[in-house]
Length: 255
Length: 335
Image (cartoon, rainbow over the protein chains, first blue to last red):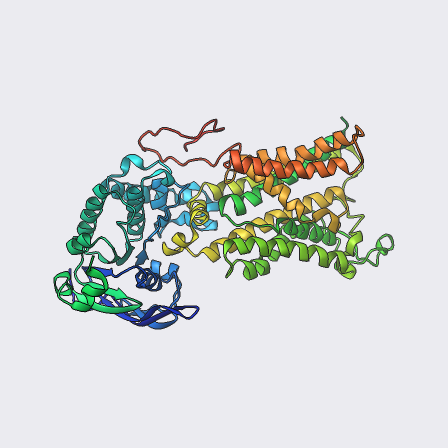
């Protein structure tokens, strides 16, 4: 449910690449229970910003607070364990693992996932495995991919890979999901399907921050929307309000 | 075929199988391109040697210079060999596996292998330099008569026990959720880290486990050969093991064993037989061997990248039936 305390607050984030300011002092707040959109022209720094929030790229400067904890210096895997999970702009499925295995990998609490646990054998970890298989299958069923569970993830279509990535992230029971262009490279018929799933997740109480180019999807899903251009935030609010801001229209919404 | 030849063949097979299972855990399952693999085998061999030899001041050994010389009873030198391989993995892993990108890791490990060999080759006081160590006592020397046929069988048996232990460890790892996480890291390290996996820690552990198993293989080898020198662990030896894992099937333990029997052992035997036939100048056969290994790697990567026995696809009980797109798969596919 929408609350008043931000789930994530990032202050004055900078990220430089060899003197190029990809992200140049961006502060945002992500409110719980909403889908916050992050839009802007190519090269605006959206994906870089998302990567800095997730920890897959370190910030050059700035601070990030997630659920009251300063996570600025934590590596990506520790942020993920705290419930801040990202997906990628390019398909990043584990290709030579089956769809079901892709989901199982992400589950955080399997006794067989340490060297010692593995050596102790099936009897030691099978109860966890059985529970997680059931959990993964219920997700697969919800997202309509149950018949594909034994397929190698590399064999899936672009849209199905997106769904696998989202399900994989959900296996971690995230508090905040960072989606980097979940509709890109996806057949138009599946775009609507993905949008429907995201609405369901939002209604379940999941908080989402998504970078997206498909404006009609941003219209449908995202409130509020943050507009970036050249490494800076140039506007935020509802899409309707943004359409009335000349600098936003000029930078992005024209054409 | 005499007993010694049979023992030679079987023990080399065992050593190669153990080494390939270890390399498969690192390269095949986890995607760690350990081009310094042979260094860990060498570390185990040297450690087992100096743990079982008398000090270099002993009358029969005074023509060599080396550290240690503890005359420890079997099986302590073999255990020591495994420990040495594991311990060596710690500093190398901490330097190489933490910050470098995967392709640079491979280069750094290759360079490590060359440096290690050059240093040991030239620093005589440590492990007798280029001349290497000789007169390494055989396991149970003094307890049983090592000059009998039955000792050869005993050695084969000890090797077989080690193969069984390593197989057990490798199988449990590969078939567990832990192994699945390693495979996920191999497929996409960044995505794995975004799902809460710590790639550095995962790589370090498998680097140490593989190093220890490699060390054990070296200990078994040195106890049989009774000699160990830098010329036996030049970096191309690692390439042969890579060829074995690629031919056998990356990520599959059965493939690793098959690769060990086909490539290192098979080539060794074929070149030995051809060598007897006096074809061309004496350097021809070894040179052709290297050409063949190169072609073998290229051929498999090009035409059959998954190897003779591809990695198994995991199908879970209760899954809907699927068409299998992999052809001539050996062994059962589902578990």
